[in-house]
Length: 50
Image (cartoon, rainbow, N blue to C red; front, side, top):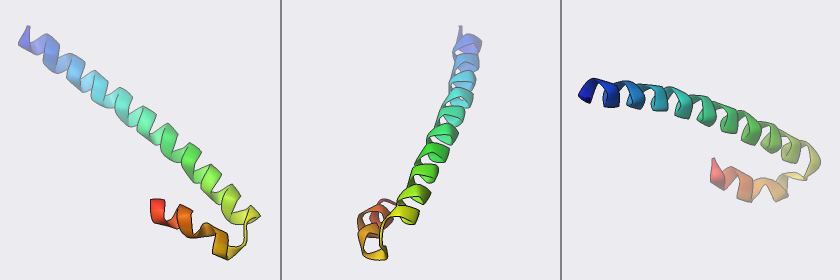
């Protein structure tokens, strides 16, 4: 039982890492697009998120 829980926790961690990586790439691409579109003064709210 304990081994099963441990194994599922490891797989959950791997899935979470995959999801976090995908989300990071999506946010990064959107952030780059907003940097390219907006003037430098408009980037302050985005920079505060980082």
